[in-house]
Image (cartoon, helix red, strand yellow):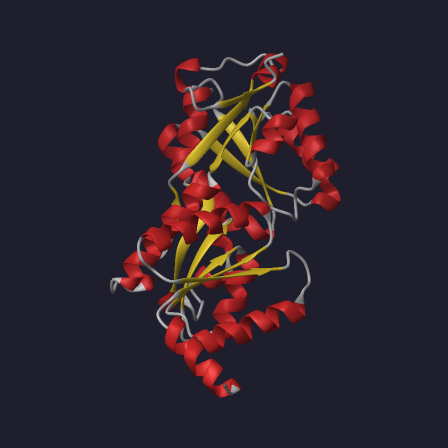
Length: 306
């Protein structure tokens, strides 16, 4: 059989299928697996392509060539890199992203984006309202928190700030970057803030700056609210974050709606509805904080009990 015949057969077999493209990071893999399983249970055909976590330009070109041969009706993309790649290279495809952090700050969802008519998806962010509601219910005595924000999280920080107004919780946004993090720590100390609400921003946080912030919280008896369970384990007061498997299943629902005829633009951005919570009771003791245990349910992961 000729190469042309092989391509024609692939197009015939795969047209109308959903392609799932994601970088090889553990949280994306978990979400993609749940997404693919859910779609197949609904009777949809899927094609899964995993991209290298770093570099891998050759692999990305190969993936694009494969997708162009297949011609999927929808491409689900895990993470910012995969989403930007597919939007640029497959101009006729609807794109449904998943596990994208700080989605409000992405270029493909900006008002000037040429992709708004064909993109929708599920961010890895818990909604600002749910974040501040959980923190405020757990520690109502804290009336003011600070977000350390870089260029990549301006709109994300603003959305949290606006949501906090409904809970009488003041949110101050402090510009920061990891290259001048000691100055940010000094500014936190002089501000009189009750603590820090972290947002995932690589221009602000790395292993060194996270550790420095946790030490500041312990020494100053300030709460630090994390965006990942690992940071809570390391010493943050607590955190609420998206469950990757739930994001995958939620993304399948978005894709199903598009397959049923709903335009992607009318769906737009969805916040993760499946959230998990964690607290570090050891840190709570260290900072001498009062926690309202009525809002610590049986599913909340607890660290620092010993």
